[in-house]
Image (cartoon, helix red, strand yellow):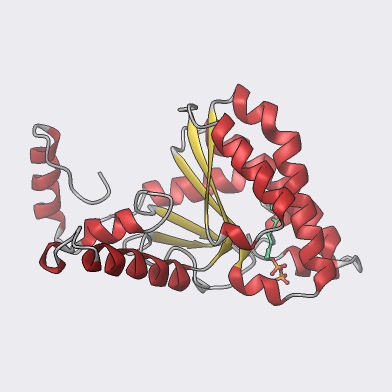
Length: 242
Ligand code: FPP
């Protein structure tokens, strides 16, 4: 969700005004994603590196998150949206952590869409944490090192998120910036010029149409992929991205 600061600066406003407008875009896009039947939506709301921003900006982002949790509660329940988080949540202010834990619990039975907030998140750090979890399990004798595979790492990464199909970055930057590096191995990358506060439901629609036209081969050639796809449709075997 890049470009809040530049959106504000272009209007001679404070960066925090850009984040406020960015929070409105979050509400808009969550609803649009739900309407379109998206099963998982992960928003990179605050990175571990963002802690290094001026304290007024960090404070405003924490306040906006707390407001979002309070104001969106009813809507999440009504639309059947389950809230989860990834990141080093323990670093967040206590009141925010408590509000998050409460809403995660309250929405845990919702089945309409999973909304994941990446907070105090960094993908490399998440991989480091996952490695520590796995090493602990090996040292405790709960896991044999020869049994470590991709699924072990999937499971050790918090959130239990499925692989990313479509990754959208706004504001013209063409970087991943430490976001879901493991999970995005085969993601389609969609770079949008608009600043995040200007991102509309129609822009999500355009990104999804673009995604639908992509030929996703997962390292195979198209004919083999189609054959496997037909076969997996008639068996319980699943392929990446299916
Ligand atoms: C990046 O833009 C955006 C952020 C660091 C924060 C994103 C936060 C929100 C959209 C609002 C709060 C979130 C929720 C879920 C309610 P930037 O500030 O780096 O923009 P710039 O690159 O133009 O400076």
